[in-house]
Image (cartoon, rainbow, N blue to C red; front, side, top):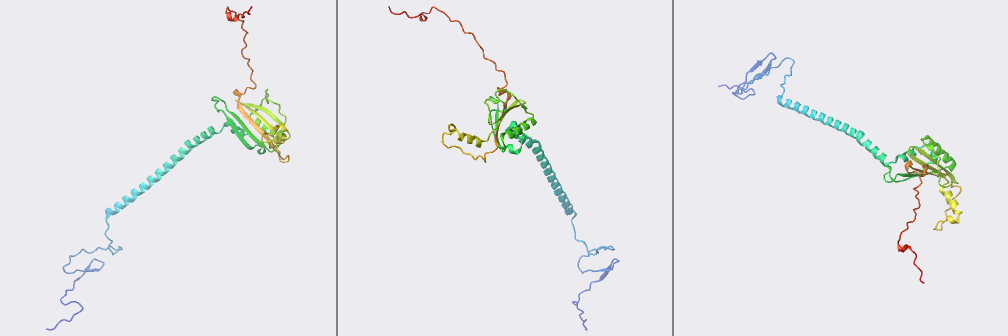
Length: 281
């Protein structure tokens, strides 16, 4: 018996038939015993490689999740924008008027008007404000006093303040007891505006007063230290402004005399204590 030579395959192995499926001529071999799969239909111009399987439900869920996240981000931005606008409204409509109100209450309007006087800068150095009493005249009306230092003599300084007071609406007030005592080295004037009266006293600087006091032995302080001042450095003048309510200023008001009564007649009675004691005989 003549054997059949091997051709590279196992003996007795069946060669699967080759089928020509479809118009494209793609060949597929069927393995014996394996279930047959339907041929893949390849359309002209399409990718011959089959796409991997995808789950449509997963794609829909991913799109819905992205939309939900986008909506949450938009809502968060909208809330932040509204919160910012509300905060700005509270600051503008609430806090700023409150701050200005506190400032107006804490700052005396009379001192504020004195700050607004159009006086040169050389006439308003080292400003010191003092006050006492109530602004609303509760129990006692407020008395205000300002002290400032000027770099120029009192004549020029007094003229500058007089011009500034007239420009601010103050009127010169010629009244008795203005000043209460004669002023030699300086100028003393009185003013009125609305419900206030103002006393302006421009005088020699403190260093010049100390120099005059040093020449008077009676003016030497109890400590025995005589103040000295260099005449070349002692220049300028001192400005004193006193403001009070006109209702509490007694100047310019008529003096009403007090009640004047009559001397009563002596009353006579039979009281023995009123009779003189008889002298002993």
